[in-house]
Image (cartoon, rainbow, N blue to C red):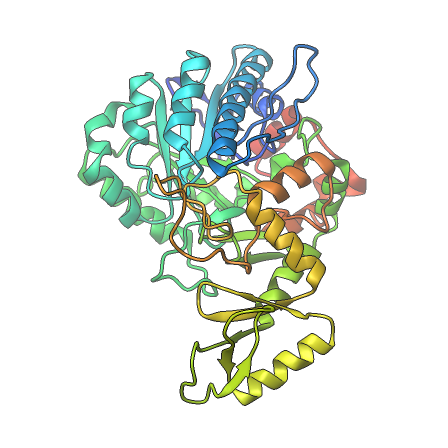
Length: 465
């Protein structure tokens, strides 16, 4: 393989190897500090990061507020405190090597306020901010105000064009790189647009080339592009290295850093990764953000899929084929179903799914009473972790609501990601992963369950494998 050449990233020459940020304490100060110490760019997550007491013990995020607005304020304070704590840990462990970046989601609650709070509290020890999951127009202005480089995450040249023309052109000196994240292969939330088919993956090369050609029009030919999503062995990307068409390229690894000694995920999670097979990662649209996301197929995702399959449309009055009255709840007017759907509903009820729940789209889903009660309890306990949540109908506007009914076909993302991060339950919680995660099982590097240190992994990646 061609020799891997260093790049200037966030003001320092480093290996063009970047740890992808993964939220809710999965990319923390320990993992990112170790990655930077190995000569690359470590990335801790600024999304509800863990914080610690004076004794160094983890502080559980327990919400005491009686209203969503009160709990939302608590969440902001947790997030800022945790982000600063992880930045400090990463800084200490980096030993002055590499670079330390922070990753946030633009669609997370109070993104601007949290970003200001962490960058203010961790001055001079955070060198860059990566940001995706939405259109982060203001990330450039905020990062530049702290003399920190910004790294927008996009999945198309068109998306970067909109960001550049609206805002980024005013802060060009602080644009560290543009992260192209493959919307079909990356783990977590994916940037598929309405014009792209989730079942028809596209070759990233022409998409990244189009991005580079656009960047050259604005004098950004030497600003690196970071290829993210689907990267495993660099030897498979050798044609991208020193390619004059593409210009300077770095590579981001989100899934492989999960399986390291410093990775904070549970041993159960690590063992699960080593057993995955091709096709075990599922591109789905159950997330309350409204984005597609990629996660491991397990009972958690299976239940969501089955929940949506137990779904029928209703009318508020007799309309067309909707002629059969059906009572939802103990009181109120009935809704109307087609004769076929009524028979299906009665069959579900007979099999224990006796609770009909309305969705925002004039449909009913059928759940067991116990599960229906849990869905309602999770919706009530919402702490406003997103800018807008389909599951709970929270929105960070003055009204505190999206104006739509809560959607029981989704789930509380804060609850499940906190649970898998801290309890290690990999079967009944959401388990994000990139689509190449199945390669852990066949990659000879991980034979006999070998788990490397971050330093060992970075050195291995640099060889091409």
